Image 1: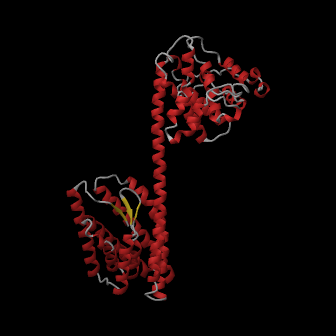
Image 2: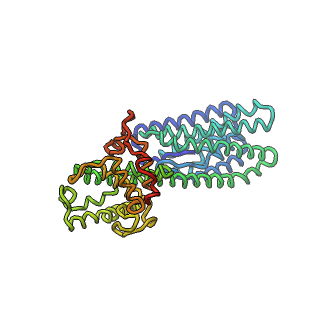
Image 3: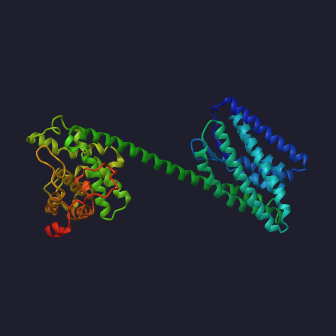
Length: 462
């Protein structure tokens, strides 16, 4: 049975009234069942099933901060299907006896709810079983119906209790409904086996199955617990990564704000890098990583002294040395975040040259990280097609020719070829880099004028 921890009720008066109502409901249903002629059945078997219920309750599994999954439904189902509502109520209510001292309020609510569940299961079995003449069919239908009834009530009662405490039960239902759907066929099979064993072998033989069955169910719930924990960890890491990336974006915005000539540069490089990687046949995860690398490739510039980025004339030797240190500064900043290790390496090496003449490490060819080679092409192209204090922006066709000329020396020829292919099929605003991030107009635009015939084959110049 699913339970919600109740250490400190949020609505004391409401939760006390709810506890009283559940107790009155369970007591009233027991009286009605006895008055209708329902009997206890085998005192010895019911007592042993109650002990099994207590043991199963002790083996409950925590599936979340506020959710626990008990294993006590199986003994309750066995008692209700075999002996009727009174036995089901006793086994269900007794399973929480050892927890009376921990929290009286919790004990009243859940023991009442579990007793009510046992009564409903027993009543359902008493109505369904006699209506089907064939024994095997009767056992099968009764087992399935009672398992479905018990799980449905269990989930509904847990959600209602959660709601009474002042919480939205949507997340609780999202966790419990799939578990319950899986448990119904398992419970139905076990109940049918127990009933057949009880009736055709020996009343005591079925007890040989009950504790191993509880153990199997516990293993299943432990698996679900681990799966849930792993899922929560992945989600938490994703949120942390997104938070870190958002912070990095804020720093990049600060860099762009220091120089009106490069405003939007990082966003454009990010989109170009993503599209290059897509053109080369990589999947969505690699495209996203390329986008993130492009977005933060200049993050190291935030550490540059005032006046270096903003300077309108040529840089001095010392200023040039400072500027060329920004890839290393960017790597140092990003490497502090474990999830950004690949991004940090791309940032460090995005000014390397394919022929080994770049900085900071003079890497050659494929020794340069792939994403750094992608960023180098996207970065250089956007820089050429953007206005600078010392020159006007180059036309896309001219900038593309410059990329082609540098293929094999400054740039990876495969990356250049992929990017030129992207540009040939893109709008003029895309080729100029003056589009808004991820918000390009759907209205057909003038093409950028980059053609295969005007550029020639990339490999030929490599």
